[in-house]
Image 1 (cartoon, rainbow, N blue to C red):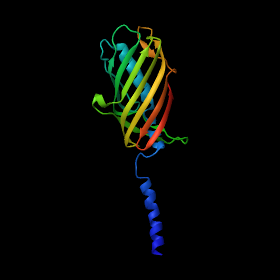
Image 2: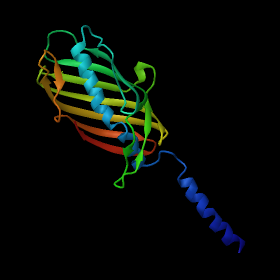
Image 3: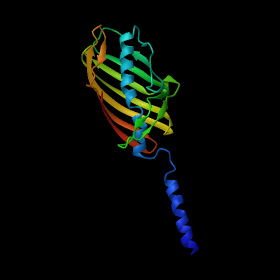
Image 4: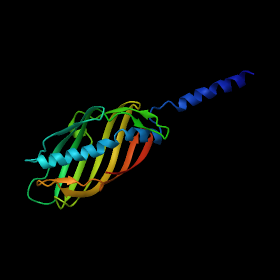
Length: 201
C-alpha cells in the first residue's frame, strides 16, 4: 500500500508546481496588456500635443495621469523645418500608472495592475511616429518596449505594436490624430505568454 499512497500524495504536488510561475500563459499576457490598453491612446495624444507645442527639436514634456493613480509622461524630439513630413522620436515614462480595475471575463470579474517604466529615458518604451502630409495627411508608427507590473500580476510586459492612421488639422495651425481612424496591431508578451493586440482608436 505504501507505493500507492506515495503516488497519490505526489499528484497535488505536481499540480502545485505547474502553477508556480506568476506569468506563464497567454491569458495572463492578455491581462497584463489590458491594463495598458487605454495608455496607447493617451501616449499618442500627448505626442501630438508635444508636436504642436514644440519650438525646437525637443518637445516640451507632456504629462497626464492614470484614471486611478500615477502618471504618464511623453518626452522626445521632432523634426524641425517647413517640410510637410516629420518624424517624432518619443519615450513613454510611467510612475505607478493605473487606469483602475478592468474586467477580465464575461462574468465581470476585475483586477488592477500598476505600471512603471525604467527611470532612464533611453530604456523607456519607444514611440516613433512618421507624419506625412501635415496637417491633414496620414501617419504610421511603432510603440515598443517594456513595462514593469505590480498588483494582480507581477513581472514585465513587452509591447511590439505598429500603428497607422489619418491626421486632421486642429484649426489653429497644428495637427491631430483623427479619432476612429487609427489601427494598432502587434503583440504583448509577458512571461511565457503572448497576446495578439488589435485596436482601433
